[in-house]
Length: 206
Image 1 (spheres, one colour):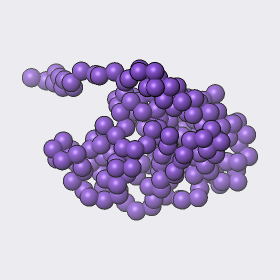
Image 2 (tube, one colour):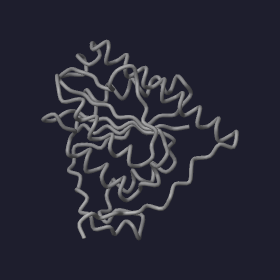
Image 3 (cartoon, helix red, strand yellow):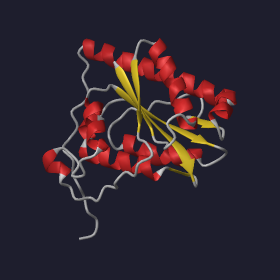
């Protein structure tokens, strides 16, 4: 089993990475393979709603996003991490997730996922809420912890000193491992994911 952890911060070794690394460490201890994917500091093109991906299964903008979708196909779970900018996730992580979930939704559907936010002080719950909507619309079991999945600090050293935040990351890793193992046991026992109805789009303005 493998979990991809997406670091939505432009800083490869910053506060968000520190939080994700603690989750990854626990997952590794539980025998689950992990990989931290750096979204990086380069601009990420927004989704333009062209819907070309509905025909091709790939985003029309052929950049790293299509590669991340391919890697997601073989993953069993996900953690999406973001720093907080103006009480909101980074535009970079939102653009990446919009395109990944629009063009490659089947690679994420019905796989457990979690969201992690890192902030100096505030804006974490709003950021968690914004990103969690990608998960809830994609039939993904959302993994929780013993507090909201957040850490605080303006540097990695300060994040490590956030004892409750780091504990929350460790408990998140344990819960993710448990859910993944339960899903595997269910499949081995013949319990398969539900076959949902074909999507119906209702427009209320006629």
